Length: 83
Image (cartoon, rainbow, N blue to C red):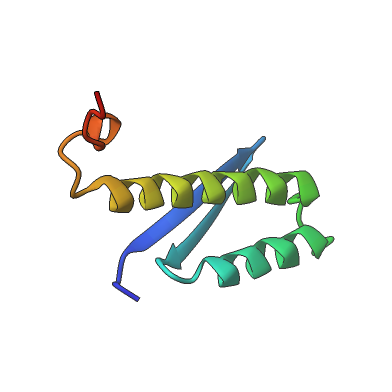
């Protein structure tokens, strides 16, 4: 999409899972998390997938907030006083 590279990292005991993805490819990342959770060769499980999915969602919410509020001088005072 816009070329922004992002990553999610999960440290689990001695293992570290690093998932890198491009902005706009979040659906593919979720598919990858499901694939990892079903792979019996790793210790990555459904709880780990849920944790990273939550982190991804929080990141997207923060990005949406930044985009929505970028042109407002003060988001908390964005509406004129009706008094």
